[in-house]
Image 1 (spheres, rainbow, N blue to C red):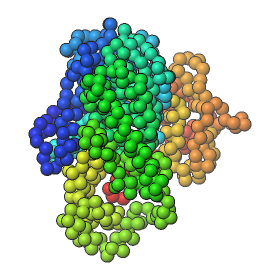
Image 2: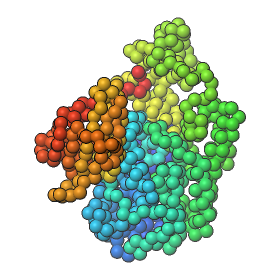
Image 3: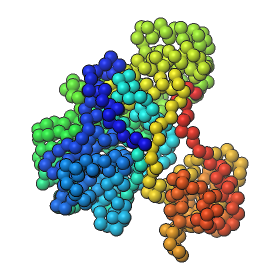
Image 4: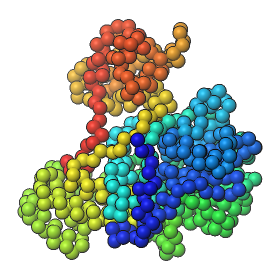
Length: 586
């Protein structure tokens, strides 16, 4: 099974075709370059083996690994490539700069969890990392995964008319994802650590590109790792796959602090995406311009909000000053100024723009039926849309045909014209995720909902807290059916698997259609319908879908006491989300 194929991007060696934005084509040519690169003597990066970069810092005995990619397979390949050219050095430390999966998921390819658990291998991360790394995609994971298919163009063919990259890197690897829990937290800016003779000074930057993130300075090397806080693209204030809105004002403030702390002692800046910036003057200018971009984005959006503009209006009006606009590392290859402006509006003002006409609108399908009827019927709308298409007003075509397709999803002419419209919009997009969204939408209109390439098994379950596991169950409960089922109480005794081990006790209460996780026993001494004793490893296996609760009971891995039908009832009330729900049709 192929988990990464850089050769698929060989077409990027050619000149930019008319089916791609020249700036995105250039960016993709750069991010597709693959190999082992020297940052400074003793520090090397493997680039082009995943969406992100992995960095190797040589110490007295071995090598420290910073951000080991998404998948174990590509991380192992990167380490093998490094060792081929720099010697068979042991891994003597692992650092996660922040809590996104492309910066930790491949750790099992470079490190042994038992070494970390025994304290033989330092695993360093910013405070709050484990909570956010394990929990970021648990609650709305299915919806985020579906939209990620669009954002990264995962189901598109790679080529000049299809997926050419996403601006941050080429795409995401499809191997096995895991996580080794940190055993050394960075809790304050100014904290210093020395691992294998390598001195490091840390700066915490929470709430910037990730909720838990940190920069790393190497004073003996005059080298600064800025994680994902400063890359060679404008980043996302809100990713199109969905996430909590980030704070560009805090982002700018932390970059100001970065300059104050490290500008005078830094000659080279590198991040966990793209390529380094060499030379003190160039590095400082790069950081200053990145800082200015996020500050300008935030402040001008807020200024326009206070002048009464909505998010959509701000997105049309906002432009960077010429000095920033001409800098390629501020280009909208991954995060666009347009959707970032709307994100700032959302952060402060929410979904409602204040116009009461938008307070109680019909849902998309009901509105579409009415719009289409008002405009003379589906055939008339398509005929008018074709005139707009020929005039090049593609944004309007996409909007009006969306009404037709939500009113009459099977309208063949509307589907074909909308697909052509999306394709032209995608081919003209500078932003990689925009291109991938448009082209995936076109592909699904022509051929039906696309499935995503399969990923290897996940080793993430063990990193979740018990509360996170139960909360992930709670958001899958079918509320109306659960309300009709009445009150249900299940007591859980979770052990480490050793005989007579003390248990972590949790109670799950089903009440009025809501599943309430509670630590400890039920309040007021209410008697549970069922008590279950099991090892944490069994719970992880159920979460990882390698077994089920009934199978675990049958195998003796869960010991029930009480009415076992309570477990069956609870399981029957849970929905398994369909990962192939439609997006461009109702």
